[in-house]
Length: 109
Image (cartoon, rainbow, N blue to C red; front, side, top):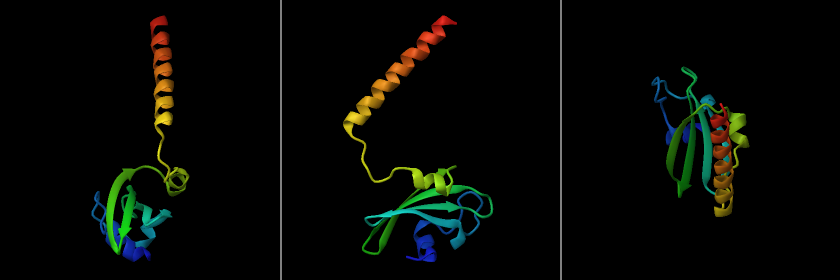
Protein backbone atom coordinates (compact mmCIF):
# COMPACT_ATOMS: atom_id res chain seq x y z
CA UNK A 1 0.00 0.00 0.00
CA UNK A 2 1.44 3.38 -0.94
CA UNK A 3 1.85 6.24 1.53
CA UNK A 4 -1.02 8.34 0.11
CA UNK A 5 -3.43 5.42 0.58
CA UNK A 6 -2.11 4.88 4.13
CA UNK A 7 -2.68 8.56 4.94
CA UNK A 8 -6.31 8.20 3.85
CA UNK A 9 -6.72 5.55 6.54
CA UNK A 10 -4.37 6.93 9.21
CA UNK A 11 -5.05 10.67 9.23
CA UNK A 12 -5.27 13.49 6.74
CA UNK A 13 -4.61 16.40 9.08
CA UNK A 14 -2.53 17.02 12.20
CA UNK A 15 -4.80 17.15 15.24
CA UNK A 16 -2.57 19.78 16.85
CA UNK A 17 -2.07 22.42 14.15
CA UNK A 18 -4.47 21.30 11.39
CA UNK A 19 -1.81 21.04 8.67
CA UNK A 20 -2.41 18.38 6.04
CA UNK A 21 -0.01 15.44 6.28
CA UNK A 22 2.37 14.77 3.38
CA UNK A 23 3.54 11.28 2.40
CA UNK A 24 7.00 12.31 3.68
CA UNK A 25 5.48 12.70 7.19
CA UNK A 26 4.71 8.97 7.34
CA UNK A 27 7.05 6.05 8.11
CA UNK A 28 6.08 2.39 8.23
CA UNK A 29 7.62 1.06 11.45
CA UNK A 30 6.42 -2.56 11.34
CA UNK A 31 4.10 -4.71 9.29
CA UNK A 32 2.80 -8.11 10.36
CA UNK A 33 -0.28 -10.22 9.70
CA UNK A 34 -2.52 -7.51 8.25
CA UNK A 35 -1.46 -4.95 10.87
CA UNK A 36 0.67 -1.89 10.25
CA UNK A 37 2.47 0.23 12.83
CA UNK A 38 3.07 3.70 11.42
CA UNK A 39 4.74 6.86 12.67
CA UNK A 40 3.27 10.21 11.65
CA UNK A 41 5.31 13.34 12.34
CA UNK A 42 3.79 16.69 11.37
CA UNK A 43 6.12 18.71 9.15
CA UNK A 44 4.66 21.94 10.52
CA UNK A 45 4.52 21.58 14.33
CA UNK A 46 6.57 18.41 14.87
CA UNK A 47 3.97 16.47 16.88
CA UNK A 48 4.31 12.69 16.48
CA UNK A 49 1.70 9.96 16.50
CA UNK A 50 2.06 6.20 16.54
CA UNK A 51 -0.72 4.72 14.42
CA UNK A 52 -1.84 1.10 14.53
CA UNK A 53 -3.86 0.09 11.47
CA UNK A 54 -5.61 -3.27 11.17
CA UNK A 55 -6.48 -4.06 7.56
CA UNK A 56 -9.35 -6.44 6.99
CA UNK A 57 -10.50 -7.09 3.43
CA UNK A 58 -9.48 -3.62 2.29
CA UNK A 59 -11.09 -1.83 5.23
CA UNK A 60 -8.78 -0.27 7.80
CA UNK A 61 -9.39 0.56 11.42
CA UNK A 62 -6.93 2.75 13.29
CA UNK A 63 -5.75 3.66 16.74
CA UNK A 64 -3.60 6.79 17.22
CA UNK A 65 -1.37 7.66 20.15
CA UNK A 66 0.65 10.84 20.74
CA UNK A 67 4.29 9.98 21.34
CA UNK A 68 7.69 11.60 21.65
CA UNK A 69 9.48 8.54 20.26
CA UNK A 70 11.50 8.79 17.07
CA UNK A 71 11.11 6.25 14.23
CA UNK A 72 14.33 4.41 15.11
CA UNK A 73 13.16 4.11 18.73
CA UNK A 74 9.76 2.79 17.60
CA UNK A 75 11.45 0.09 15.53
CA UNK A 76 13.16 -1.25 18.67
CA UNK A 77 9.87 -1.65 20.58
CA UNK A 78 9.01 -5.38 20.74
CA UNK A 79 5.63 -5.73 19.09
CA UNK A 80 3.71 -8.89 18.42
CA UNK A 81 4.43 -11.01 21.51
CA UNK A 82 2.01 -11.16 24.40
CA UNK A 83 3.28 -10.77 27.95
CA UNK A 84 2.87 -13.99 29.93
CA UNK A 85 1.26 -14.11 33.35
CA UNK A 86 4.59 -15.27 34.84
CA UNK A 87 6.32 -12.19 33.41
CA UNK A 88 3.67 -9.99 35.02
CA UNK A 89 4.09 -11.76 38.36
CA UNK A 90 7.89 -11.32 38.13
CA UNK A 91 7.45 -7.63 37.36
CA UNK A 92 5.10 -7.23 40.32
CA UNK A 93 7.58 -8.93 42.65
CA UNK A 94 10.48 -6.78 41.39
CA UNK A 95 8.47 -3.58 41.84
CA UNK A 96 7.43 -4.60 45.35
CA UNK A 97 11.12 -5.10 46.28
CA UNK A 98 12.06 -1.71 44.84
CA UNK A 99 9.23 0.05 46.68
CA UNK A 100 10.29 -1.58 49.94
CA UNK A 101 13.89 -0.44 49.34
CA UNK A 102 12.76 3.13 48.63
CA UNK A 103 10.64 3.19 51.81
CA UNK A 104 13.60 1.93 53.84
CA UNK A 105 15.84 4.64 52.38
CA UNK A 106 13.30 7.34 53.20
CA UNK A 107 13.09 6.15 56.81
CA UNK A 108 16.87 6.52 57.18
CA UNK A 109 16.76 10.23 56.36
